[in-house]
Amino acid sequence: MNTTTARDYRDIPGTYVFDGEHCRKGYGLNMFCKSLDLASNRDAFRVDAGAYLDRFKLSIEQRRAVLERDWLGMLRLGGNIYYTFKLAIFDGLTMQHVGAAMSADGMSVEDFRAMMGSGGRSIEGNRSVQELRRG
Image (tube, rainbow, N blue to C red):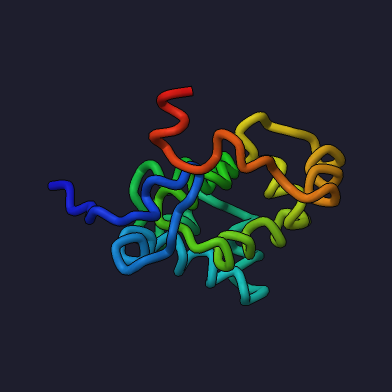
């Protein structure tokens, strides 16, 4: 059953607002990420990622996104950026690494830093999903 509620922000490309619906969807994923606060949990995840993930109620898609480090996929599947970033830190990554990986054009970390340093991504073509469909 699709319980997606109509929201104005659903029309903004690449925007995954962490609302109540998204929170419920990503609860297990976010609890996994939060668990990485403890060194013993990080060690257990490092030793056997699959067995460690079995401790959490993750969908097949969420589990795949974690194992493949699909950062954007985790956000789409209910991940909260603050929690999913704990996994990036576990991997020794910076926010720039994750931002570059989540960019639609798969840019390098250096290109992402340069883009952000020069004012960020252009608003053209990024205002609404409807605009993208027309373009």
